Amino acid sequence: MSLGQQPQLHRRGFLTGAAALGLAAAAPSGDGFKWAAEAEARALASVGRANWTRLANSLTGPLIRPGDSAFTRFADGYNLAYIRQERRAQGIALCASTADVALCINWARDNKVPLVARCGGHSYAGYSSTTGLMIDVSMIRGGHWSKPEEVTFGAGSRNGDLYDLLKSANRTTTHGRCPTVGAAGFLLGGGIGFNMRLHGIGSDAMTASEIVTADGTVKQLSATENEDLFWACRGGGGGNFGINTSFTLNTFPTRRITYFKAAWSGTRTEMAKVAHELMTSFEKAPREVGSRFAITAPNPIGQTKQFGVNILGQYQSDDDMTQAVLDLLGPALRAVPASQRVESWPEHPGPCVYQIAFRDYWAAQTRDLIELDGPFAFHERSTFLTHSFDADTFDHITRLMEGWRGSDDRGSHHINADIRFFQTGGAINDMRADETAYVHRDNVWLADIGLPWTARDGQARLAANVRWMNGLYEELLKLTACNRHAYQNFADPMRKDYESAYYGANLARLRRIKAQHDPGNLFAFPQQIRPA
Image (cartoon, rainbow, N blue to C red; front, side, top):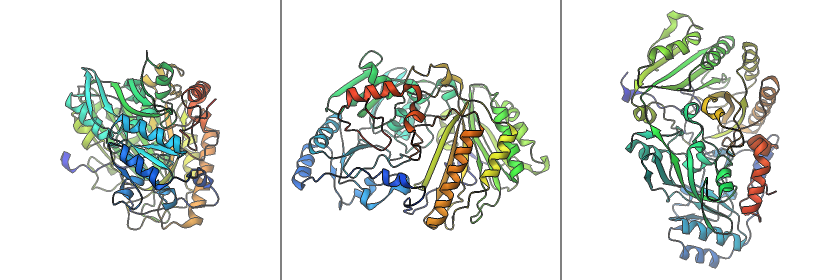
């Protein structure tokens, strides 16, 4: 199969991916969805039309109001569960400069209007939405090379913009796979990607940033200037301390990669064995390997009736590492009969399909490893694993996955609940837990349960599926070597202990920094870092 024919990869996996559903599936009220009401808790203060007009006349960029033709395009976020008329902003400021951002912050504070920053709108919990003023930085997206090895770019840049900048110098850093995700949110929460085991998470590469704080002051951040705030912005989560308007990252030269992907389908016991073989094998992989694999549950009312496992990853080396990748995949490939394996993608059905290819770095990132989902409704729950699972644990987990009641995916791509395992460790764990705000430095896998749904599912089925997900998550925390931490960029409104889950032992320092730079708690949202 030629490179141009490669299928695009999706968040839910490539054979059972949940792509754009084209529907408004709001999170229902009732059992398991109290978090939806919590996200709407802050009421909008009464602001006169004249005040909005004054703001519009002061900005360099446009102010969009309800009823304007472009309003819906900028108001709605990626997770369809949070698209509701009553939660849309009263104004969206498309800021063209840092000065516009400062002006908006001062206006919102003085008028007691809730505010939120927005770039890509991919917040898993809809936290980049507000009933007040949305400060959209997507117009602040230019970039340049500040040094031969350092790139500086505006906070409105999406991952795709960063790809273009990096590709122009044949350099890279730890980046995400979805080109429409805002680079700011990715970095502020840590930033996981296939380069992280070799070079650390995205925020580890941050050498400087610019931020506008609650008093409207523009501050430059680095290891020698506003050091505490710089420390907090390297993994402390977006929206807590101010609105960042630019970032500077250290980069490294690209190398060719051997990229790989494989998918299996079969019985529960077969897929439990495949998953265990993958985790056991890849645990021994060198740091040049980045991988993510997933177990997908059968959909009893949908299109996919079997369990599935899929894996995707890369091996960085200027040499073709096809044989090394085959050695890593070998135990899992041998878990199905050899006569039923095929080396093509994806036209040939069967228990196992895989592909391995030696590529130029950016050709692989933008054509083979890219993730192109459209908006859909979902909830996710994550935790970190301090060591790999044994076979009995995979057997137990897959038994629990049979409890998912399914989703009505007629008219859409295949939809499956799943558990994804992102391979961590390596360079991430080389840093001390308190060296940056990103505290998760003692693990080898990040596990993430995903629950998608469509508008056809109805309240009763969705509530039952949420109870199933919560039960599976609590069991995951109990029966494995989890440290009960969770990844802050996979925001989980159901975690009531979110501060300790996201920030661990770094929380006390983060709360002091929050109190120092935002004493009035202007930057508030349901899972904020609370001021000390």
